[in-house]
Length: 188
Ligand code: GAR
Image 1 (cartoon, rainbow, N blue to C red):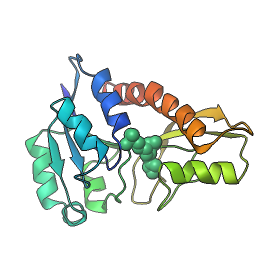
Image 2 (cartoon, helix red, strand yellow):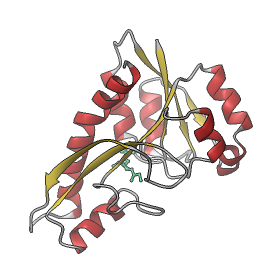
Image 3 (cartoon, protein in one colour):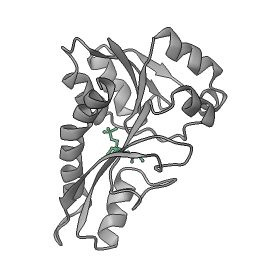
């Protein structure tokens, strides 16, 4: 059984979708969720499903020692970033080399980097009158949104799209592909 920890700072819709996808899996288990935001929707969703939540501060993340003990204690094999806002420190990347996977709501390298998160990404896509957007699932390296790309999927951006409608298109791609990519990588 491979064990996953999901890191998130936001509403937690991807975390919940991944959790549901692997609920009856005999090979992959969502062991716990780590968040830097006690008030985030992800905490509420985790409670509804009885998933263990661990709070980590920015300092816990950069220092990493305590967090590493916690990850080892839960026998975590892979770390999934699903809307996690803090930068992953080099120490963590070297311990989990090619075992940290992120999802980003644009076609990287476009609209990535520090501060590019959720709605802000979609607003920039619309402001720049892009004809397409999409999702990027990638391994995490030391730089925001720059690791090796595993999968990209596109969607059309129409002239009438709003932030909300574009976000809906992106979420449906995220929900469809993120769990499948995780499954493929973990079971290869
Ligand atoms: C998702 O759209 C994810 O792609 C994005 O944050 C959202 C989190 O939503 N991630 C980034 O922007 C990373 N730079 P969720 O908490 O409902 O899953």
